[in-house]
Image (tube, rainbow, N blue to C red):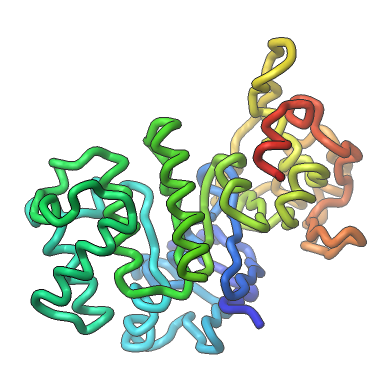
Length: 333
């Protein structure tokens, strides 16, 4: 049984549609990645699911969490789910933490709201959470302000705050953005370890295919407000089918072999106010036919278990620019 079941989720802002019927499931304890360029609708999908979009947004469809409908649900229903049952780590930890309040006070507030702990008991739990996410000397640093921590430590504090309610689902929205490679690896290891210890499910939103493969079992590729391909990590890395997915892999530099020019995906994500006819990727796709420019493909389950929205899928078993790299064996093992 799915922990979260999203069906035909649509979002528009001032009459401009930006999500075009998202179908997506997350099972209990499962880690699922969402990848794609900026503007593809990855973050909007989950902000809509949790009722966090501004009032000008119009949301339709269904988002069921543990059987409860969240779309257009009463505020009390959403408040009982947000933070406690579903927690979200936002992209920029420095803007998520209040700069004029000590981190301990902010963390204790989450513990009090979601767990009902107070006083010394809440403080002890806050110290435990900071220890859990790897903040050194947590018992003494709990009373420091956010600016007294590094960017990577602020991200760890945000993870601790998300864990304060002991959620069933953690949504990590590009949690390694703006962090250097070493700190990124530490955050990914931390998320994997916490998942193993708590058994919680996770949705990992990222541009980084390698990061997604390191912490997820399955991934969905989004483009222009639609899921265009979905598969297990092994299948997605070894046999990407959608031309957009292939392009994402081909744009990644090799770590081994001769130096070669990258193969970028030419063009940009279409303006949602003026979407192209047919497949949204057709203006950028070398495999597009006249049929592609007039008919929008649906997401269809393939014989190999891949969900694909494409009339002319790629025949490549492994993208040449990336598949020969040692990274694929490292990430998709």
